[in-house]
Length: 129
Image (cartoon, rainbow, N blue to C red):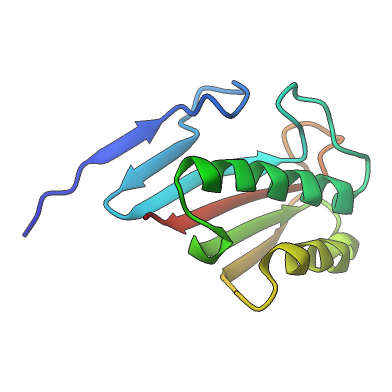
């Protein structure tokens, strides 16, 4: 049996926002910490869940490029919503990026995220190259 190492990664393509690893790699699996709808300068993409979701997937694309993989390598998405009435808007944006490549998914209703203006947060599990 091959010994796998755990790599805790701080990625230069993401703004520093807390005391946690941006990603953890274990073998061929990559676990991404939660992404919210802010750009590299921590500017909010918009007040609505759809705008924030577009920004999350733009950030995800940067991370996928960093790991030299594509959207087809996303194995699982966990989505945290502060308002379940935004579910359809978030799903419509997700479909733009994933099309027929459907990752496993979990949707969780939460009372709040780290800042009150955040409507949605997502974390991802990837298959590495």
